[in-house]
Image: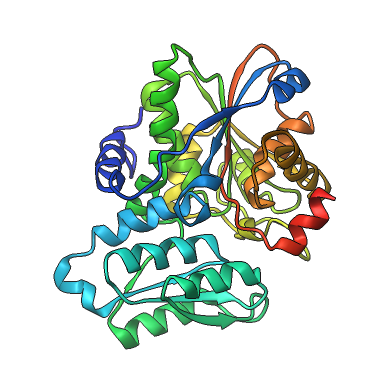
Length: 326
């Protein structure tokens, strides 16, 4: 089922080998309170504990490591609202490469400052009026640099897939089988990698995307069978999940392997952020909590099932976090 896709289990195995000395093998965390609320066995993949605070380091490092040594001197250019930015910046620092990151001017200050802290040059743009990819292409052409896409790239997707390779190994070691796997979706790179890795080991698992309410381009695309734009107007506290349409490569994978998409409102996401902090003492950003929010809101039936929920990132400004948990 997975061998004919743009990214295969073998690609994810290769990425795991590349990442092993550098990425954190994040834990699967359980919560009796969460099990009692949902009637299932819920396991949270805590990518908030990953290097740079999100899963994005995995794909970024795998991609940068694939650049020929002779081409690394010109550096890399990426475009991101924050988590991919930090992942690329940290990977470039480790590999001693120059990184330029195109970020929206309304990205959380903490994400911008941490990206600079890894040594990257940050170029700000207006999310509503400017085209970040066009800016990145112009910068890359001027510098002779390699563009590192946030999701629509086989090396990036394979790196993200190591998230599921780990939790599948952990579940198998416990003699357990995942009935449902849910992860946040923006461009779809994380869920694509997760779907390939999970289906290779547990082909009967149901894979579900979670998105902010209104920003449901994946759910719309699964329903129509074609890549669809979302219809959201305005913004969402899930700043990491505002891509307007699924990626071409990611949708080619997800259309075949993902069952459906669910959504959660900003209010529901805020409650999920507070729940994780209260019950597990973990800091999760809004975009990283949307899968859990959908579960807590009753949009996923977990009764009698083993469910893996990916907490994809924990990079949230202190003022927003304090509002959500308060």
